[in-house]
Length: 144
Image (cartoon, rainbow, N blue to C red; front, side):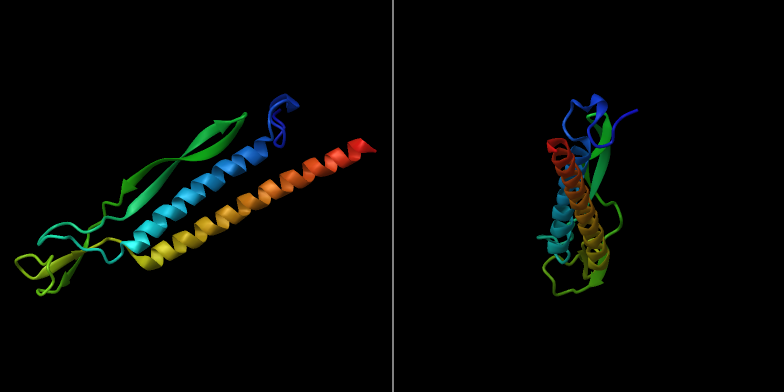
């Protein structure tokens, strides 16, 4: 049976900390992608009839870390949902009918995703702190 704190056989580095650290990195990447989506929520095409910014979606994959499963960012995919159409014939990016394509970014959804990523990040920080405290207490007991 694998020790969830110290990995197999106790010789490997602290697996719990490494798994949590992989999740911290993944959530940090997720927050960066969400911030990019929010920043471009109103970006339109530069030319008439062109495509605006397309929302980006992070895709994660499981990866093995010292006998345990961690996570990493596998790729960033463009969201294939339709763009919003808005009638604004005076806009430089308007098509022949006067419609402008707007990004498929919903800032409310992005804000909720950001909050979820933030909570996951905080939870993994707590895992690292707990593992560190357990290791410290173990050392204190062994010193006696």
